[in-house]
Image (cartoon, rainbow, N blue to C red):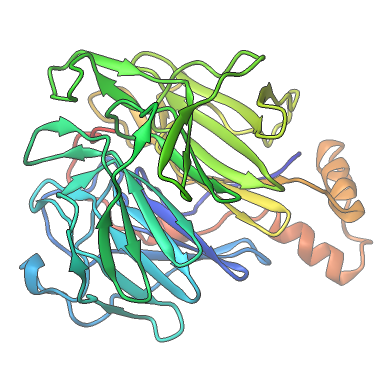
Length: 391
């Protein structure tokens, strides 16, 4: 059940986010109007999931415009982030000045400090738009677009975090085709890969003839085998740049883009029954509109969706719009999997515009948190118009 929509958060596209305790950390990402060619430290925004308030963290020391010696990553898009204990690992991504990156960075949420861990093993090629998942102490990355080879990738690598060792994973079975902007999720000991954009070239070389995927692939981490799952139900239409999450053993996807159509649908996949199901939320005013390049993160029994880009709607208020006719969002939506009674009451009060003056103070404050816009977007600097980057 969608229960809240708040504007005024970070206006972001192709950002990366993680959940640690009751906080969601958002790293990087751009929007139309920002200069993609200026090197600057990666921006970090933090959401308090109790108060639904965003804040921008101040830049930390250690940034150098020479990426090879900087302890702080340059601002970028198309990167990945995973949370391991109280640490966040950032890998990959690009901007229009430095290009793609394959340096690993670590952010300590306790110390609010960046480091550049020393890694060993075979480091993956520079790329953006790859997929990432964390299973125990191991981070997996799949695919993406390799800048040096000008190709989509189907490689899979693992990083053993305690030893910071990169390992190329030699897989077998029914392997997925090369692609970028797919999603990768963990359920049990398996990785579930869905969606993405590839090319008609079987080796993934970039010819401009795009192909969109909607088959579900599963990677068994115990024997390194890929399998393509068959389902008795129809899967979602092919797409890329969607968002995914896992809740109680089921995989969910939202939104995305297939080259001509933006999606605003939500689907769930149940590995136990191998079935897809599209969720119907009716005409809720809190339901997000079609978009791509957003982030979705679960905290407790709630999912938070924020950012992304959509076609510019006719008759809407003036917002930053680029040459592609897209505008980037600063809104956030809250999905409750198990809404409490007070949440249901709050939704009813919003629907029927009921007076809140006689509510107890704690409930009135909670009502305010779910209705009051954030102000982070007003703090962000708008620069000269720039194109809406790929992905």
